[in-house]
Amino acid sequence: ETCIIVGNYYSSKGRHEKAVQYFQRALKLDRTYLSAWTLLGHEYIEMKNTAAAIEAYRRAVDLSDREYRAWYGLGQTYEIMNMLLHALFYFRKAAALHPHDARMWCAIGGCLLGLDRRTDAEKSYERAVSLGDGEGIATRKLAELYREDGDEEKAAKCYLRHLELRYQSQLPGSLSGASADTSPDAFETVVTHVRVDEPEAEALLYLAYYYRDNLEYDQAILCATRLEEYPGPEKEQGKGLLRDIRSRMDQKAGERKHRPVGIGDVRTRSSSNSPSTPAMGLRGRRDFSMDSKSPANAESSFEFSP
Image (cartoon, rainbow, N blue to C red; front, side, top):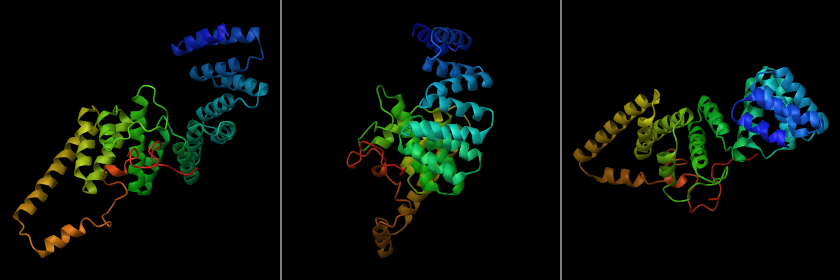
């Protein structure tokens, strides 16, 4: 056990050759040490030694066919080698043993996508989202797939969920899939405080365009404003979008100012409050997943059925 602890220490420091030495020492003392074989496989993966990784993982599953980490490691190894059918087989073995782990379903989805089995891939990613998807991988991949399908509302929901998950991961002691904030201002809280890296910039830019096109200018401005702090190309796109939104708002205000109020205007205003307003599924903060008035506020309202 001392060798395992020291090996894990060197692994965390990125000194994988040194970690391998200590895991091998542990195995010299006990050839049936299951975790040592699995950890050894992980280190060989980091060192890009796929043949040695496969050997280590196979030793682990020979000792126990319920060692899901070793099955998952085999899947990763074959995926690196671009042998996707083999990888899919091993990822499915891991998922069968550990079905409530979103990472397993993300891995399966990636293989299926690589095999051009798009519909099955979407189902796997949806399963990962329903299990929490703490790393936000499945929500982002689903958003990309929905965008390609032209389903803007589903794509926007995925991007919202992705931002929510990334914000939750920043909170001390947060749990994967749990609601980070149940206040009515949750949307503003998440968008304002989430750390913006490349995936989050992509999500914010898409949502800014989505809300602009659905005439939700306040939400669009909030998303685009966050991009001003990001150093990538999305920063300039966000600035251009802000100018466009403000121009539209000024134009709309000017039209209202110079238009006489008549019966037609009263009818128009009253009809604008009808339930037939486009894209109501995502309009306004009340539909965001962390509304305290929702009976399901302990979980995001954005869910998929496995």
